[in-house]
Image 1 (cartoon, helix red, strand yellow):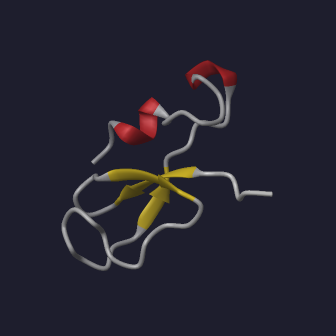
Image 2 (tube, one colour):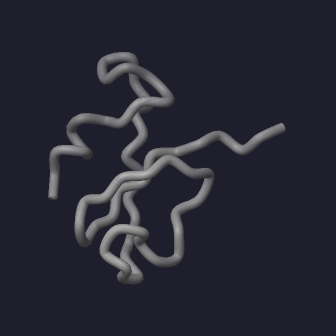
Length: 59
């Protein structure tokens, strides 16, 4: 069974990507950043598989 894909957002540049685990280095800014789980887990924001708009809009 495949691991569920999660939306990850770079805390440095805001780049988002979908993967089972966040990368060691951000593909966008090239830095070793903290990645925040930006996946939606409630029906109000579209449910699993979507990006939570409240997290995605924060920088």
